[in-house]
Length: 344
Image 1 (cartoon, rainbow, N blue to C red):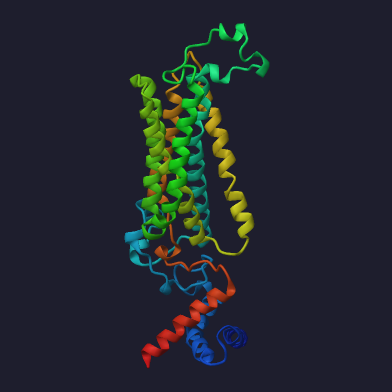
Image 2 (image 1 turned 90 degrees about the vertical axis):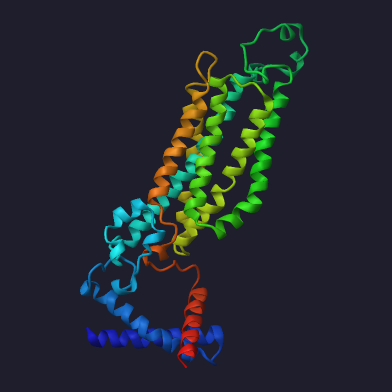
């Protein structure tokens, strides 16, 4: 086994030297690769002998001594699952972390779409005449002018109800589009867990406030517009921050499959966002619950997300995913050259 390790090590070092020369040129490449060899040998030995120390065999390819857990960055639920995080050892497998991140971000963004759809369902209750089936030739007919409609919800139950509903939609879309310009920068500079949880809470509160209008008897147009502006701003943070978390954990390998399955959160959320509010979206039922129930679901998901999401593998001592071979080698070789110069 020792001879096989040495043979593997020699071939691997030669491969890295050739790659470094093709990336950086012959000058300085040998020095960079030599600095990598000591670390790589230890990691290769650990992969061949995963039972050499405690906490190994988790698929990370790193000896337990090289994996330090940043306990301050871990949420409480992740610490409880980890068990030994504050002892500086990590026993939770890499694949399990990836699965938990995939599921948490999937259901989180599914809830974003769940909270967007109720207003499109309840519009028929707010303005029944806006959704009456008629032919264009009957628009000004006597029978249509004298038709009686179920009572709607002011201020949308009048003749200009469709225009007012369009203004409410425009307020949300404008805030969402404008927020997209800033949400990506916010996600890059702040803790993603706090950013996403704040956005989820804000989205849940905003959709809940639309339901409060029924129980509080609110009929002011500016109330619905302000709530929609707030909701659009909160919703705009969800996509950039969620994709950033996924990018921290998943690299180039099977990226199309992983992201394709992950993006099914959109239709799943839209389906639930239509089915759940439809139960109360009738004239004889309290339509306020069409908004409050999705809001409560979003708040529950935000709580789960806050206590269990690990936004970056480095917080648990795991390596970052490889997005491309050249970038990974460049990063490693640059670090090796820097350390060599500092030692000299």
